[in-house]
Length: 178
Image 1 (cartoon, one colour):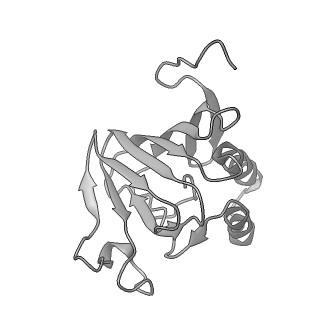
Image 2: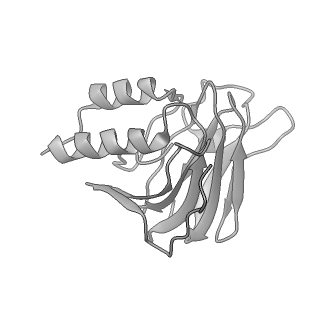
């Protein structure tokens, strides 16, 4: 059993950087059961709605404004998650620092930055495989991409890390977070 925990200041930790990617690993999954990150979200980034078969995630806005969605929609075939509605009438929310989202396993979710300003969030994932490895592989793909990202390679990466994409990525986004 470890004799100490982890204490890090803002921006401290293992930086995973690449084109359009600003992720700082705060705590890896091993020995913990979760991976924790500080993530920069570029303006007009939209990760698209997606789902993980297992694992949980937590999102908490530190700076800026983001939109969040976490529910099973009445109709998954609607191509824009902003138009989704839950059976109880719930729709996406938009907010700033302090906004929180918890994602249980198997529940569709999405986030995006609709503003002209970057945002920062705390992100924690217990998705199997350690989400830090997803970000490491993504950074390597982005580093190799000169003129554009190979979408087949990105789809393969997401599939290997239990990410089923339900709606498209938007705004020229690279898939930077969950």
